Image (cartoon, each protein chain N blue to C red):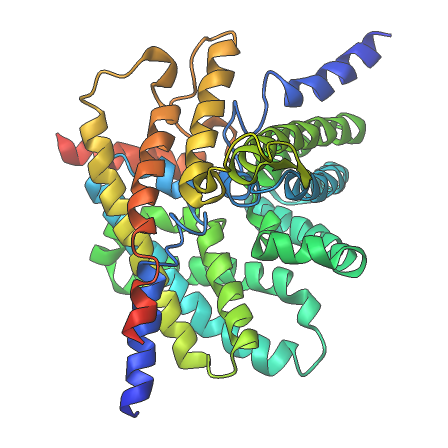
Length: 229
Length: 205
C-alpha cells in the first residue's frame, strides 16, 4: 500500500508541484513554438511523453552499465533512437501533425525535460519509478502545453480544437498566434502558476536545478559576476 | 559568382537575421536566450560560440546528409547522426581551442558544453536541408550563409535582450511578475519589434 502511494506521488509531482513547464521551466522552445493550436499541443505532448517514458525505462535499465564519464552522450543517443521511432510513426499515421510540428518533432531529442529526467531521476532509480516519473512529467508537459494552446487558439483564431467558439462574438486577436503572443501567454501562465504555488512566486530563471548542464551555466554566471566587479 | 547569386546570398543573410530570427520568430534556442542574457558580455560570448558551432555543424552535416545518408537510403537516421556529429564536433572544437588558441578558449570555452543540447544548432542543420528540399537553388553555399546569418540573428537578439534586461533590473516590478514572467513579457515586446521587419527582405530581392 505504501509503495503504491509512493508511486502515485512520483506521478502527481510532475503534474502539479514540479510541473516541467510552469515550475521547472524546461523545454520552453517546444512549448512556445507548437502551441498555436490546441491539437498541436496534444500531439507534441503525446510524442514527448512517449519518448520520455521509453528513454527513462531504457536509461534506468542501463544505469549500472553506462560509464559515468560518457553518460550524457549515451543518454542523448538513447533518446535520439526513440525520437526517430516517434518521427517514423507520426509520418506514417498523421502526416498533418508531422507538417504542423515540423522541425520541432526531431528537436524533442534536445528537449531538456527528457535529458533532465534521465540525469536527475532515471539514472538513479529503478525501472518502475522511472517509468511513472516519465509518465507524470509527460502528462504535466502536455497539460501545460494544452493550456497554452487553448488560450492562444481561442484568442488568436477564435476556435478551440478547430471548433468556432468566438465567431460573431469578437474578432480574433491574431497576435496571439504570432511569436510575441507565445512569449506573453507563457509569461502570464508562469506568473499564475507561481502565484498559486506554495512559494507564492515564479521561478527566477529557467530550470537550472533540473538541467544536466547546470554546472556550465553556473560557471558562466560566475564569470559574468567576476567581470562586473 | 554572378551578381544575382550575390544578391540572393545577401537576401538569405538578412532574412536569417531579421525576418526568420531564430529566437524571436522560430523559438529556437530559448533556454540560452532566457538563461545567459543577464549580462551583455556573457550574452555576447555565448552567441559567438553558438554562431561558430552553427556554421561548422552545417558545414559538416550538409555533405554528410546529401552524399552519404540520402544515397544509402538512410535519411531516417538524420536525427541520431546529426546530434552525435554535433556532440563530437563540440568536443573536438573544445579540445582544439584549448590546445591551439588558449585566449579564444578562455573566452568561449565555458559556453561550449551548453551548445550540444542547444536546439538552435540542431535546428539550423535540419532547417537548411528542409529549405534545400523546397528550393533546388538552395545549395551548400546558401546553407552556410543561412547558418551564419542565423547565428548573427541569435547574437542580435541576445544583445538587444541583454540590454533590455539590464534596464529591467532597476524597475519596480509587482512581486508576482518578478523573475521569469517579466522577462518573458519583455521578450514578447522585443518580438513585436521584430515583427516590423516582415516583408522588408522580400522587397530587397
